[in-house]
Length: 111
Image 1 (cartoon, helix red, strand yellow):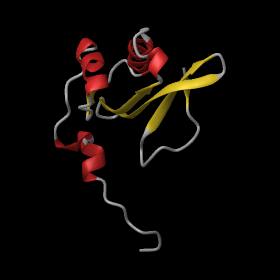
Image 2 (image 1 turned 90 degrees about the vertical axis):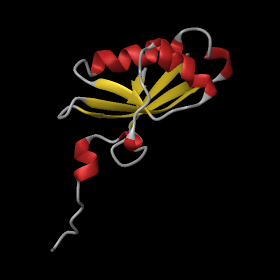
Image 3 (image 1 turned 45 degrees about the vertical axis):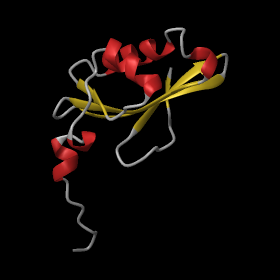
């Protein structure tokens, strides 16, 4: 499991799941250590790796990297619903952004 150096989106991070030097999946997430909230935005696994426990290991890895964060999800896909239920990760309400992201106002430079 490797953190991706490629920007995913505003504030989003990506954990790449690698098997024999090949990316076989990814977990896209947003974590705010300031308010201790985290949101899992997307989980993608190649077909051969869906039932081998890799998704569970990836989410356990996220929890170990952010031990004080309460995780939620915006996903409602059939393929990930069982994984998130097994990991006790509830559905996020209100778009899944922490209070810092919701209240952030971008001020253009020079104003």
